[in-house]
Picture 1: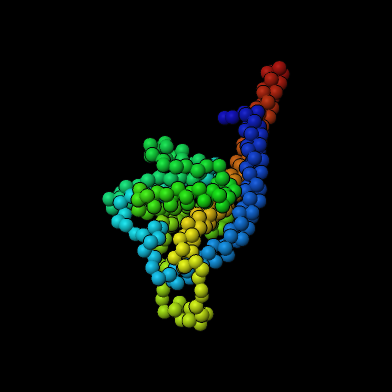
Picture 2: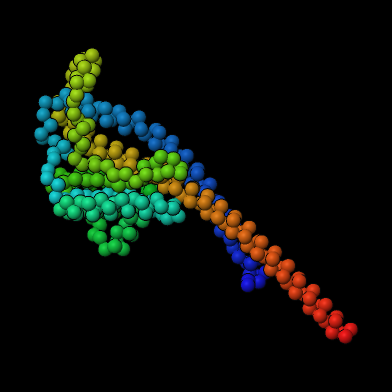
Length: 296
């Protein structure tokens, strides 16, 4: 049985650990609020960008010359898992990588070759440990991604797609639902999903009510510039969703850790009191036995 001094040292150590986890919980909570504010500020821009691209595409006479819209037989696929640079965030990194590896097995079963691009130190280290060849890795911005970070990823993905080295680009990331819930999702960014550019009857009626627009330069030239921006915007949205998910997962994990530390402290305190009582009882018995020996 552990002595009173051993239990005191353990309690002191756990209390110090609880201080750290509580501080990390508060920091993650503050960063989560900022990340949520950035997502809310970015969503109207992303929605308007999508609307502008759709309207321009439907005004174009032909989309054949746009490389980012061309569809080919899928033989090579680039998977881009978006992870964090640090741990202590529960299952945040693990569930993204698990989803990415499941997607890789599915694509390999269909006969496609997978190419890895990764954002975040945790994703890079896991892929390297499993002896995967990483084409490109971006690190150092998972807590607070900037638009330039999304541009760098989008530029590399577009280069691989336009050169024909890959026929499909898929991003895998945690979608922020709440501080308690983050869902691992996958999204095709290249080629541009066809459903975004399809015209239906309701759209035609709406266009007739709004009237025709005069485009200068031609809609095809405008769309050629908009498509890379659309890819950058989608990647930036994914980075912001991932950043908010990471802070939410870390806040929840640290809160659970603090609660577990408090429970452990209570249990050890009870054990320490029992050990102290046992020591006192033993001392009393020794004094009584000594007194009986002297009087006897």
